[in-house]
Length: 305
Image 1 (cartoon, rainbow, N blue to C red):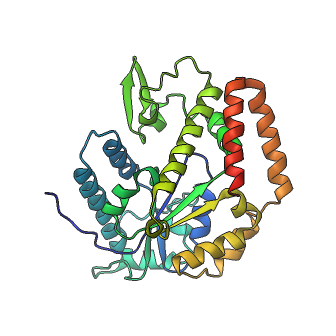
Image 2 (cartoon, rainbow, N blue to C red):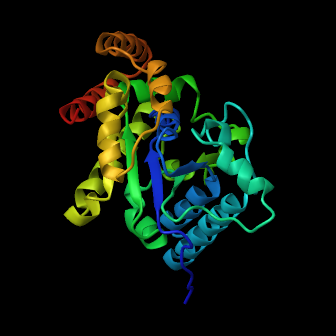
């Protein structure tokens, strides 16, 4: 039986589908006190995905996830692997207090992350594998970000997320099927005859429904460790959304929040106009069947806004 424990108890997972706006959320989270810079390691999600398709055992996946997280926490505490890339989401320069990372890096003594600080991990598919993550990272806090399906489909389609590209697919669990390389969530879907826009609607709709179904299955106790944040609310009324996150985590925002908010806020009309434009584009090229599916998913999403 595999056995290891986390070396730090306070951990935040930030999850959501492709193109839901996690970059915005991560930037704002950096203005919270007692938080470390964001960690992005696609290997964590790859391991969870391997467990999901039953290529490795649940126990092995949990052990590996904890081992990688422990190594990240230990290295961050020592000031190893410091990222100085200015505009990168994991850069220490995104932090409201980058000095602490330089102090760790320059210290002759062995340093570690402060006991009350939260580590932040940007991962995927947490809701559909909640039990695995709970077993791997006990008592974690999950911030799950959602966005209107029309805007998600437009963004995923525009970026050609489902067109095979070895430069980006290396971060996703893939398999060879019918002489093609496909991500694990497209296995055995029989979608060869779909156009790119129809494929995008099909996949993103199914992933959204999977998350919704998984969340409903969770117990009341488990849901207390989750906050669902809507991208639209974050753009229109960021102060309210961030206040909810603040209460959820029991943390405070520092002075850097104002400057971050000033460049992010939009009006409802701006978002509505952009969505209408996205919907017109999709409606021109998608099949009637997939437009109806997108419409139904959108109505489900709007009910919970």
